[in-house]
Amino acid sequence: LGQRKRQKLQGLTGRRVEGRLSHSYKSYLHEKKNRPWLLVYYNCNTKCKNSKCHYFKMGIKFELTKEQIKELWFKYGADKMEHPSIDRKDTLGSYTFENTRFIELEKNLNRPKKPMKNINGYHGIHLRCDGKAYTVQLSYKKSKINLGSFRTKKEAALAYNRKASEIYGSDAILNKVG
Image 1 (cartoon, one colour):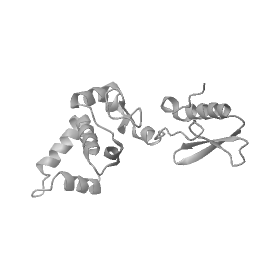
Image 2: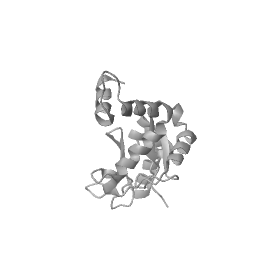
Image 3: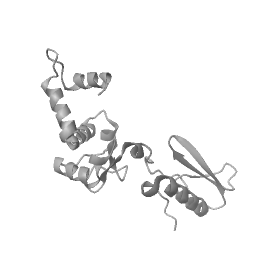
Image 4: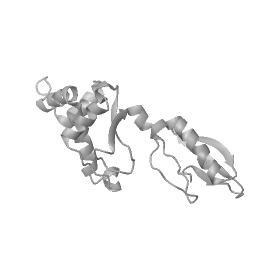
């Protein structure tokens, strides 16, 4: 650990005692090495119960036991990942066994956040100011990707789906085109 991170953790978990690490900091390091899924459990459980946290304000609940977190940890191979991150498949849902998985942190940070629909009923599609065409826009790594203009909503939705699938793969939030 870096010096700054160690100082921060010591501030949260304990202080040095006569040049040695305190018991609580030693136990933290032991848990991180031997049972890292417990740290995930404590972190998520705390976030969802803290009234100042946005998870709590959004109504996201943590409904997993320590055993379920451990099962998910090994099911998704988090022990082999460089930076494992807990993820909710449905970004608006709670942490349940069916809705939770572990993925690489970078992939989690680049996932689309909330599946929001505009007045057209499709994600990422907007009617141009002149009202003659629909423009398609996608966000990726904090930048906007413009896919062009289309005559119909359906064409625009299909173009959005193709590009979203290309960029996000199975994590893409797709429009339902009927």
